[in-house]
Length: 214
Ligand code: B12
Image 1: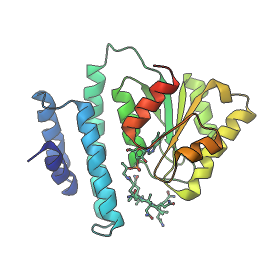
Image 2 (image 1 turned 60 degrees about the vertical axis):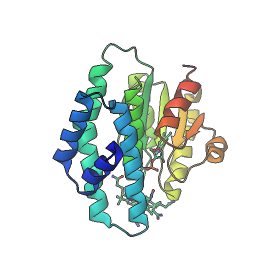
Image 3 (image 1 turned 135 degrees about the horizontal axis):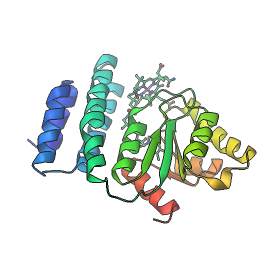
Image 4 (image 1 turned 90 degrees about the horizontal axis):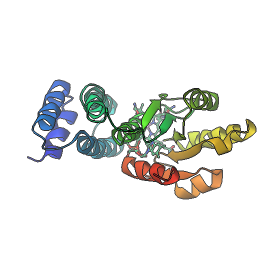
């Protein structure tokens, strides 16, 4: 059974301890890095999300899987990445969150963990984050990039609002803004004057490196 199939099994069965032990053993034996495992977990969560949409699984199952994944990221993968990268120079600071009125966190958390694994300092503000909260945090930590996630067509406009608020405060040039989330597109990013858009976590890392000239 491949690593992906095995991880899928733990996630679907909400076997949080099993998944943690398995990932730990993979890391120990050097079969894959923590970043590789994050990528696989992202693919598995996409699969679980699609199953929910096609009504093959229901809400409690979806939430159980999301929590299983959150446990292994928080307790095993992020610490492993932190330990491996201790001596690495910071690639930059990214403030990331899901915009106002939107509670979807899984994709945004994956993007945050990926950025972290590539050496960025990540400030994850959670969900339903207001324009003021994004900007205040960016100012407080001296961020380079603000990342805005939106999974709802109805919440996309709040991405625009953050950019407008940056302009109002005379801070637009101080930060690069990247937007993402399933209903967003490159055209949308252009339309609202964002600096970049990405479709998934790996592309997010690449785009951020690009806009920061890394
Ligand atoms: C999980 C889920 C939920 C969970 C969220 C749990 C959680 N903690 O996140 C719960 C059950 C709470 C939920 C609630 C709702 N949901 Co919902 N949900 C989903 C579902 C099934 C999966 C989303 C997901 O996690 N995907 C897996 C991750 C890995 O992918 P991702 O989020 O797309 O993220 C990737 C990229 O988009 C990108 N990315 C994401 N963020 C960012 C940020 C940046 C900066 C960048 C660069 C990239 C980036 O990289 C990520 C990693 O590859 C989707 C359907 C689907 N198949 O996508 C519907 C979906 C998003 N939900 C939907 C809806 C309508 C709702 C509700 C309004 C339902 C309701 N009537 O109550 C509520 C919203 C409440 C609210 N105020 O937000 C709709 C949105 C439709 C639309 N376009 O507006 C969808 C598309 C389902 C559908 N087809 O109708 N939902």
